[in-house]
Picture 1: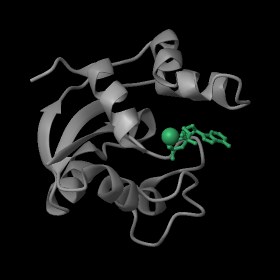
Picture 2: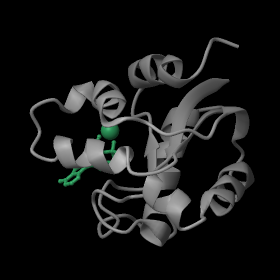
Picture 3: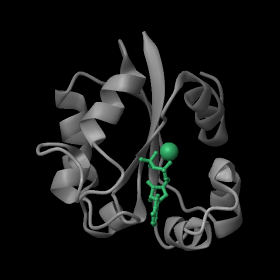
Picture 4: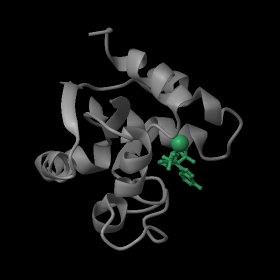
Amino acid sequence: MEQTLLIIKPDATARRLTGEILCRIERSGFVVKQLRLMRLTSEMARKFYAVHEGKPFLDALCAFMASGPIVPMVLEKENAITDLRALIGATDPAEAACGTLRYEIGENVQRNSVHASDSAESAASEIPFFFEQE
Ligand code: IDP
Ligand code: MG
């Protein structure tokens, strides 16, 4: 069994899509192992997105991530990391495949509704950012 981190971003909590996203995730075979509702400061967002230091979109991304409630969660499933990336779709909702979460509910390349770890290394550092070891 593999674990990965999903975050429901502020654009989705603001539109009250948390339940719909959770429903899609559970129907796709993921087990919710840990979950919380919280707010980030932009400083915390900057630490979380340290890999993007120097990118032109980073300041706006951190302000957006601090603009409202987020729902980070640990999900478990076989091949959880790859399968969750497939379920959420491409970063830009305009380029995301039909049927993916970002295609269906993402607003634009920044306000794309969800974050998911992109590798085993990312999951291993992103899960402890939000959750104690179970
Ligand atoms: P990912 O979330 O699909 O892994 P990354 O390239 O890791 O995409 O970017 C992290 C987040 O930064 C994206 O989910 C999105 O919110 C934001 N972002 C990425 N590229 C752009 C851009 O070109 N303009 C504005 N925001 C962006
Ligand atoms: Mg990424």
